[in-house]
Image 1: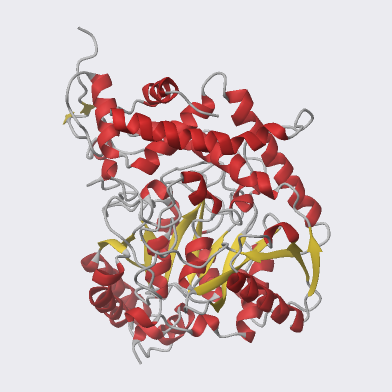
Image 2 (image 1 turned 120 degrees about the vertical axis):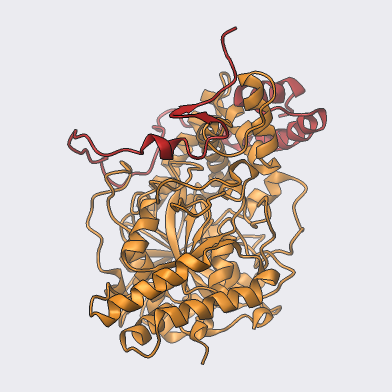
Length: 488
Length: 95
């Protein structure tokens, strides 16, 4: 058996039992990246030498009886908007070409402290703005289940790398669905925890009131092991909450949904949802019922306003956050004319069209005359969306929905109108606006063999329930055990 | 709502992004389409609804006011396109 066929948990057990070394697992992953990544395009940077050195350190610790835990020696990848000291961090943008951060993001440091072996950095939509990974300035990432299709986005590289067995797990970020949607399209598990659960120190900001770091794994337990290592308060990020991190890995073991109340929001089963996607979600709900869950229809009445509110809030915050890229302190710099010319020309040359579009939209929405009309109203709608969820969670323990209206799109099948592209995010955005935890769990395939994910949404700080539901579902199903044929 | 070219040019000026003629027109079309979509926000009665700026699950914790090690200067300027010792070099701004 090839070591890359193991799940993260299986690898951890094999390492602990001495059946495999971290160096062997790391070499197997590097071989697999070499064999598949020209076709797949997940990686922007492979750190072969440092990864092998860290793998050997892990093996030495283990020999000496000082192994650190489940992640010690496990090869993983990081989305390239997470700062890594000494390793390039580009955000898939020309404006950060060649930038090497002088420090680690807290989540990267915590993975390192847990002994994980970072194999490299993976592709994303430029500054995480997009849903297909096609706005990357560097390369196209393909869906391992169908190379003519997108892996989803913006964390498309993370999802594709895990699905294609290049790594055992990965970190991503999720501002409006950027973990859950690619996880769904690539047939892996992806969780965005509660806003504030993970530190964002060193994570390049897109929309600060929505951004959150999360994890990808082949199984719910694998995603839990990774999240367990990175979550928790960080004095360097004042938005990270100080509540203790529960034992999520334990929550996945022998998990049961017996007696659990699951809500099915009627606004998420509407026209425009692919019948095959809806069929897979309905079948998954039936499975959860057969496992003892109680299901009831609920209503989230302001769902139809979520996209509009999201795009105002996200664009406004992006226009402010991306002001820092000025060609003076790091990254691309077009040195022509005076200081103002440097700003204008550097930003014109460094940002791609989607990033410019969102900066301009955000600047427009924040400018006088539009601020009250759009920005404040969007924030008020956000309150209504949050209240919808608060009402729902008085009656149910978790909510089950599709992740996206369709399975993975064909590459290049871009909507002419940006609004049309944004509509595909309809089921994932509200979770970020309300700050809830959300998870995507593989729950079937379309007739074309494309994976479909079910979304689980929970109360703030209640990731544990999502892990229980997801793990109970995976005990009863084997969708997550399928391997993509295209990169076999 | 249709935006005018001037609306895009004003936003681009505020955001410090140079746009060519073709981009101004493309973004005018894109933003017009977005703003038309956003008009659904105007149909809601929001008078008594407070705005929500963030979704923090708790109150931002405080920490003691102690000096901590920061980024050393040589690391801070290591990525600069132009630097001079511990300084970032910028074009002259006062003639």
